[in-house]
Image (cartoon, rainbow, N blue to C red; front, top):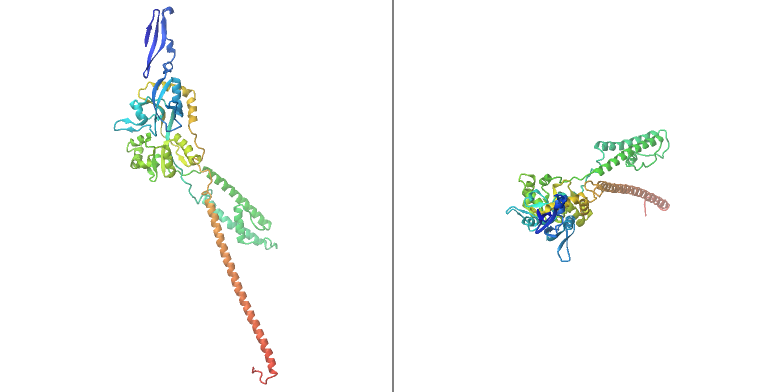
Length: 514
């Protein structure tokens, strides 16, 4: 503080520095005419509000612009980089407008948040710029992880986020028992026995009724009654003439029984199909370690690499790094989220990344229908805050945090977050709710089998009828031959007798032919 002394008054000022700029503001005064009273009216305003105007102070900003959900960069009339959108970009513009800042933005290409180099205790990328003081602040979101606090400062979190596992949903499996599961084996056995039993009772009633009923319209046999009972079971009616009242009453009873069974079967089938869930191959990091035919990876320059690479060798993360990643980095580590998701579509590959950026890429790059083929594990790993990065011991931290608190309390931060982030896809995430060809494959195969059997039986029937007709033709030909021979003999006898009769009148010896 500095006091300016005048003839009859004293003014008290505070002098402070914002970067390279020295600024002063009056805090109060003492006047001899005010009965020796010191009026420190400037202290009625908090320090952060008093110093809200940074007088156009220029700060150097390094910004990754990989993810448009968080940062979108453009150029002004002088071809200098400016923030034009994104969640973090709009927060930085708010800082600029309210605190009267000027940004000198350095764009960072690719996934350049930074990797730790243990050999010289330094960082690359955005973290390296902040560590070396080449940047005063970051212009994008960055993970405020504990292992980074030694090198840089962070604002309070602008979002809490975590990483999730992404992999392609398993293909639908063909199950023969799809339509058998609603009933237990005991019920299916009982139903199988009711068919011949119902046919036998119906045929017995028919036989008994013949003794006092001469009506022949109800003529039947056991085979016809068996297929009639089967038709009733599948609610397709009972063909033929029902006959006497006793048979009608029995058939109505069979229909009522089978209708109740059919309704119970349909209700159970609908309930099972509604609640059916696919059997997921990966449900945790332990499954990744134990599934030998599945690969696992993440972005090569992401924070996940440090978490796995520098974990204890005996820990789960250390074992996964040793077994799944270290020996085949080229196969498992990718350059960006889109590459990782593409690999997950085409192979047995589990990709770990932030859930919100991955969701946006799935929707925009692959489309909603394709996005629904990816299963996102509900468990969130390595949950922490995303913040604005600052160089160590930055004087901007307190002012940025104060501004973030105002945005948070006013609800503007949440509104902008909801506006910037992509909503979750509305698709069948867990349940198989859509019927496809594999669901009805057993029924179609049964239909094909029935058609094949029907054609085989038809061939047997044709062969039987042909054989029967052939035998009949042979028998008829034999009879015709016999009849033909018989007629020939009769004609021969007739001619012989007629010749003999004529010869007796001319010859003395009738037995001698000319």
